[in-house]
Amino acid sequence: MGYKTNSYDMAEEATLPKTQDREPTGKEGGLVCTGFCGGIFTVIALLVYLYNFVDNAPCDAKFSIESIALSPSSATWHVDFLVKNPSSRYSILYGGDETTVRLGPLNAAVLNTSHERKSPSHTAFSVDFVAEGNTNGVVFEQLDIKLRAKHKNYGESDNAGHVDISCYVELFANSVSVSNANVSTADWRIGFVARSPNTGCEISLHPLSSRLLRGSHVISNPSSPSPLSLGNSTDVVFEKVVLPQVTEDVIWDLRVEILYAMKTRVRDVRGLLTAVCPDIPVKFTTDPAGKMTGSLLGYMRRCELELRADLA
Image (tube, rainbow, N blue to C red; front, side, top):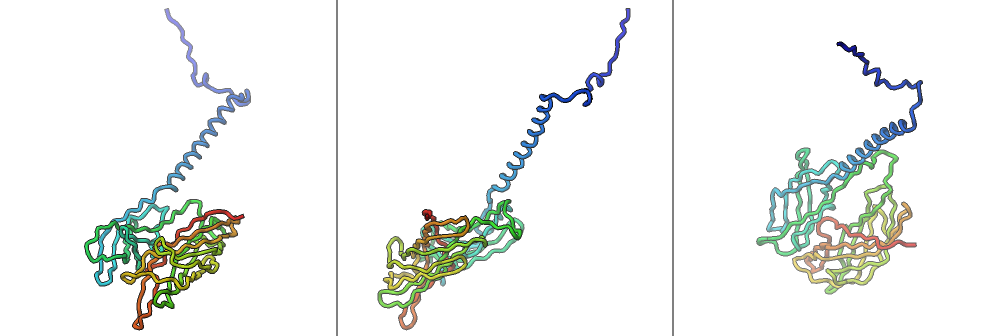
C-alpha cells in the first residue's frame, strides 16, 4: 500500500511578509534599533580603549652605562650612556638645563651634556659633572641622573591658530655673582629667569620676600627683588652677607627662597607662589690682590615651585 507525499519548498515557508503586506511591529523595530545602537556603542568603546591604551603607554626608556671616567686633575666625571629610546609619544630632553646629578648624598654640578642618535631605537648620551668632596679615591656611591621628558597627547595640535591655554611657569637660578667682598662680608647677586613651554601664556611674578640660606641656616637679611615676567631675567641682591667658610673653593648647599604673587591673564589665575632653589653650587676664586669673587658652577639650576593659595 503506497502513500503519496507532498513536497514543499522550505524557502517559501520561511519567506517574510512583504513590506506592503504589513508594517513592522514596535517590538520588531525596537529589536533592530537596539542591535544597531549596541553595535555603535561597542565600536566607540573599543576606539576609546585603544586611544587610552596608546596615549597612556609607558615611556619605556632604558639607560645603560657604557663607561665612566674621572679626571684626577679637574675632578670631573664623564659618564657615557646608551639609551633605548622611549615610545613615540615621549621625547627625552637631554640639555644641560634639564639634567640634574647627585652622587649618593653628594651634590653635583653639570658642566656639559651631549647626545647623538645612533639608530631609530637607541641614542648615545654623555654627561660631564663635578661633585662635592674629595673623589680621588675609591667611590662607592649611587649615581642619580635625572632628565626631563615630554609626553605629547593626541589632542595637541601644532597647527597655526591652535593655542594650548594650560599655562605654567618654570623658574631657574641662572647666575651668581659675589662681589665687594671684604674680610667678613660680601654682596651676593643671584639672577633668575622665568619661562614657559607655552608661548600663549602671560604670567607675571611680583616678589613679596626672599632670603638666602646655606643648608637650613639663613645667612642674609630679607631682600625685595624686582618683578619677573616670562622670558625675562632679574637679579636678587643680598647685601653684606657674612661670608661662609669655603672648602675646596666651592659652596654646594646654597639655597634661595622667594615668595611671589603670581598672576596670569589666562583664566584669571592668581596665587601665592613659593620658589625654592636648592643646592646652588658657587665657585670662589681669589685674585693676586687677595680679593675673593664667586660665580655659578655649571648650568643654571631649576627651582621647585608650589602654588600655595588663591588670591581674591
